Length: 181
Image (cartoon, rainbow, N blue to C red; front, side, top):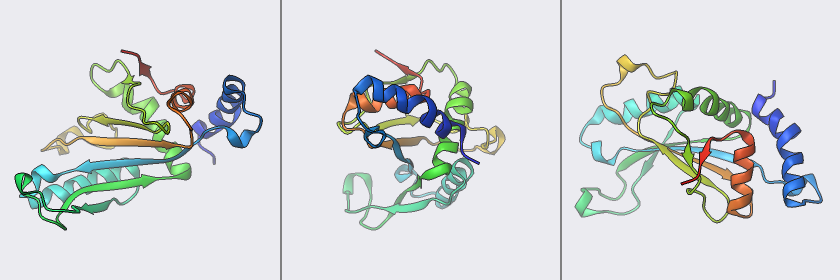
């Protein structure tokens, strides 16, 4: 069964982008290639069970087991040595990525307290979008009673867009609630 967001992309977003940017072929239209969820827990290195808590939360949210990331070099001011585990990352592609984005747009964003939209200033030159959530309690899989320490989550949406404008237009047509500042 194909995700609803992917069907929307095929039926509504592709024709709209072709008309807006004057693409000659459907293959020129930008698309989302992957979504990366990243949590850095370098501050809580001394607490051994915090890494397991982060992994458990990421697994619940994404439906996929995260990979632990290690530091590439030592930084004495942060008390980090080369090779220490300092974070966890999950890369979503294909249908699982579209299901996650559906859940993010229709369930998670409305549950965020005092949510007015996400900034449209976080695009890089290639049209990829980065944003962060300060806490994970907005996700329906995370129970409020299970949380003893809160941690944030960084989400990166990678696209095949060639510019900021193409990437912003793609995500706006998919339903991302952008606000202009």
